[in-house]
Length: 317
Image 1 (cartoon, rainbow, N blue to C red):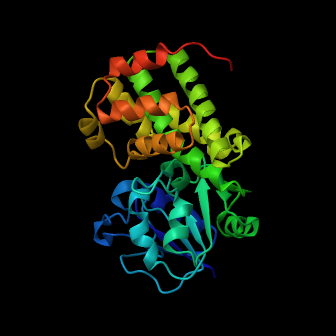
Image 2: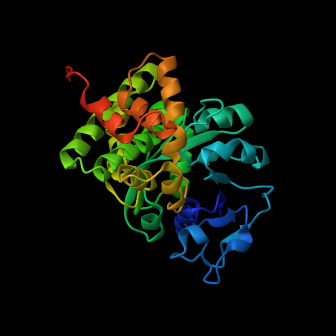
């Protein structure tokens, strides 16, 4: 029997643990606070889906495993990686490390160059995966064999996993969509309408494509699950934390107030400034990302942010 360890007991980590168990693997779940498990057997971030008794929840790092599935927020990823056992790693966290501007696979290569790594991304909400509803995602790795091996371990008819070797495009799509989702939520919260949101999503995809090209990624990747698929889901559903964050901001809430209402991390808040720094380093124009980063930092008001985007001169598409 395959032994798989999921590191991180938030909603996404618990959902993946429940899914992987259905594939027949033996699943262990590493949690910073295993005692937080509710009497029902569920963890607080996914309380409607109890974990069965055969999923061991512990704060002890395992000595061995066949696959490490890491669902730790990007800003804390480097602190957990040194403790992983010698096994392939599937990173399931989206964003950019603020201090280094590294994407998740770059953090892994820096901290644990001895481990083979892959990255999971796609239009997936934890509560639907936990409920066994159909979904799809993409696994990216430098070596196709690594991505294929991991996909074979954890895929199922209800969770279809495709593979890619465009690590840059897949990771960028997973990070940028959270920033665009905040903008989409703010657009709706401010009452600017569905037309404005559709235009913003489209132009957000265009600037992400420009940045992908500059970083050596493949723009075509952004037409797939890790690009437009994830972007549409995150920018249109109230189940998206980043969209809800933007919605509250558009309705006049302060950033600190909006953050307290969320059930988890809104990665777009920390990603916006990091993504802007990367874009500037490569001389790529990203007006939506720039506006959201300025808005979140407090250097632009909501009205000024709207005016900055709406007053831009028309361009060639």
